[in-house]
Image 1 (cartoon, rainbow, N blue to C red):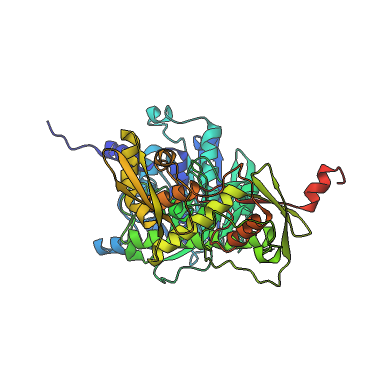
Image 2 (tube, helix red, strand yellow; image 1 turned 60 degrees about the horizontal axis):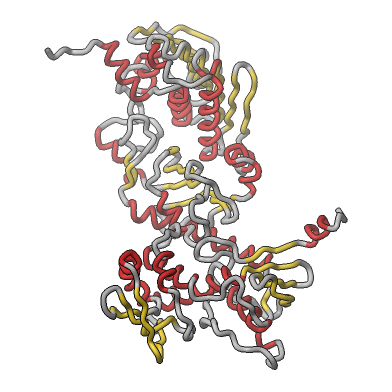
Length: 558
C-alpha cells in the first residue's frame, strides 16, 4: 500500500540528508551568516554541540514578516527561478537548512534588520513555530539550537564524544576562515574561548592554526592568478621539503565554497611531478574563482561538492599555478644553496679524464652569471657525495640524484623539441628477458625510443639494443633492472616521463662511482642550469646546504 508520508516523517528524512552531526548545523548557520554579509561570526557550543549551538552574526538580519518563510522548506531569498541554479553566487540556495535543523532540534532565532529599532524572536521545532515577538538585540541574527537529535535518539548513537564533535567544528570553522579574511571568526566551547581570528589581510594566524605553525612556515604563496581571466587560482602550497602521508590537507575552495572533492587531486600530483617522494602528498589550500555559470553546486545535499563545466581548463590552470610556485621556490633555494659551479675549464686539464657520462647541457633557465661567487669542489665523500663550498657554507650534493636530474631534463627536452634523441651503437648488443620483464619492456619501448633508447625485437623475448641517448656513450643498460624499475610509479609523471625518469636513473653516475674533480665541477655546472635543480625525477633532494651556525653547534660554540 502506498501512503503519503506525514510532515514530521518527511522532515526527518530531509534532515537526515542535511544534518548529519553538530558540524552540519554549524555549517548551515555560518554559511547563512556569510551570505547575509556578516563581518563578524561567533560560534558557541556546549557538550560538543549536542546540548546547544549558538551562532551570532552582524549580517543583514531577517525581517519579522519573513521569519516563518525562513523555516519553511524550499523557501529561499537566493533563487527566484530554475535558471538561477546555473548562476549560483551564494553558499546556500536550497532553502532547506533551517527547516532541516528545526526538524531534529529546538531552534530559537533572534534577528534585527538595520531599518528596525528592535529585534524579533521566534521558536521553531518540527512543524511548530511561534509568532515573532519583540526582543533586544543588535543588527544581525542569533540562532540557538538545543537538544540536537533529542527526538531521533538513534542518530545520537552514531555520533562520537563531545571532544571529537568539537574538534570537527573547530577544524571546519578555522578552515572556512581561510577564504574570508575580512570576516572575524570566534569559537568558544562550554564557556571557554577556543580561538578568535580578527579580520585581517594576512592569513598567517589562520594558516598556522589549520596546518600547524611549523607546516605553515613551509607554505609557498602561489603567483598572480593565471592569465585566463575566467579561472583565477590563488592560495598556498607546501614546499617540496614538506609533505604528509595523505591528501586530507589538500584544501579546496571554489567561489568561496569549501569542498571535500578530490577531482583536482590529479592537478596536485601533476604539478609536483619530480618534486615529491613517492607515497607522500603535498598540502595547502587553493582558492578558485570561476564564473558562476562555470560551476554547478547542485550535486550534493550538503553542498560539499560541485561539478565543473570546464574541468580540463580548471585542472590545467591549477597545475600551472602550483608548478610556477614550485619552480620559483626551486630557483630561490638554488640561489641560497649554490652560487655558480666552477667550470671544468677553470681547472688544469692535466690528469683529468673527460666525463664518460656527459649528456649535453640540460638547457634550463637557471644559468647564473660568472660575476656571482664561485663554488669550489673540495672532495668526493664515500664515492657518493660531492663536497663543495662557497666560502661561507658547505654543500653536499648527491652525485646520482644530481646527475639523474641533468639526464632526465636532457632526454625530456630533446623529446619535446623533436631533436635527435639517440646515437646509433657501432656494436649493438642483445638481451633476453623473462615473460614479465619482456611485457614491461615492450610497453615502455615507444617511450624509450622518444628518449633515444632504441631496441629491436630479436627473437622470442629477446631484443637488440641499437641506439642509446645522445651523450650516453657505449655504457650498457641493465635492461632487466630497467624493466623492473619502469613498472614503478612516479607521482604526477605521464607514462613516457616515467620511462624517461627510469632511463635517466639507470644511465648516470651511481653511488660508489669515483669521479674526478673536473667531472664533479662539470656536473654541478649542469645541475644549476636545470629547471628543477633541487630534486631528482623521483623527488629525492639533490643537495643539502650546511650553514656555519650548524657547524658551530656541532663544535658546541652555540
